[in-house]
Length: 542
Image (cartoon, rainbow, N blue to C red):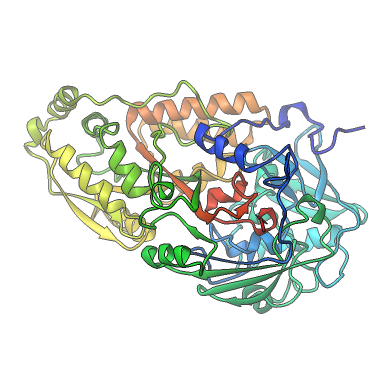
């Protein structure tokens, strides 16, 4: 008998690592009672308002309720739909709509054993036909943005009503983690061909704990709790109604929290909420919840003169005092206090606890620049660094501009509205550097991040022998069934990236909320890494 939710192939058994910082873990533990209990359910258990209606403000309402087009905008989607496999905050994986999953010995077929007794919100039974239609839509639908994510799949078939078999063209160990993301959400087969209903959030879309009561694209979401949800016992005190209001003005969010208009607000970009300590120092009636996000921001290069020379890129890495800039990055960009020195996060496959960045050394930076033929910056062409205004990366770019000027590298800053425009400037050569989101992937597996962000178009690795070795290691890791071997391959690639300064990570954002003291339960939830509040984990004390 196979153990539930463990692969029958030992090489593909998942490992769970703790990724919560001490501060977040302390917050999580204080907000929760014994394992499996809602917040406050320990000794002297709190009294909960199971009919509560809560209102939250933030900037995470997308233009579409289609899970395969959501990207990182998963607010509400995570409560309307269920994933086949559930992600955990510590990067472990747990049963969701699938209770077991197992690879064949050749690692080319993944069999999902499906949960019985589950229905969509209109009573339609959940079975293998729903999995087949949803995954086929996700991997080949005209509007799907998950095609690259699921490109390894060649077939999805039902094996009776309670099993689905996924065939891949080559070993794809990351697929299990992918099925715990939006790509693994299952749509009602009655609506799977109705793009309008899915986009606008109308109809009985998913098997999740909430149904969509109202959806106004990029403006407002209203959810209502399902009384017949299959896993309602996991949190019987979840609020009856949830409203999420789009509010891009941080001051307005803060004032709404103080006035009682909102019970929680997204903390990123809200004055008084970001940075160490945050709101508790401003108002004792509120608390902040923070968890490191998936997104890692780093310096990326266009491999043209002068950054086609590793010595110049290394000079940049040595010239910036990232530790000295830490308070600025933490307080103004909401970066985690610990600077990332690699793309995989602690707990993810590929994380290397011994990884090191090139150290701050101004004299060495000057020597390297001179060795490259640019003593004190003499002979350098005009240089530009692109920065994302939307994520306030211009603050980092301004700080780096001053640091690099100390060794003779002088740059103009070109603010851009989004990452897309930054990448376009790098590709065209109109910018030679950029502060970019270097995605870390999804769930416990970083391979998606490497393949969709680092080795996409453009590639943030050059074509030198070192660059070719890096790409080979990443390609091998993507198909390596053994988790330990994959971790070593990723670690070797990251070591090359650090040595060659292909990219320079400097910030891992914190995502989270400030909330009234009555709101609890969601503090350690996985989806906070996307900035989303999973309503079915929330409790409201009376």
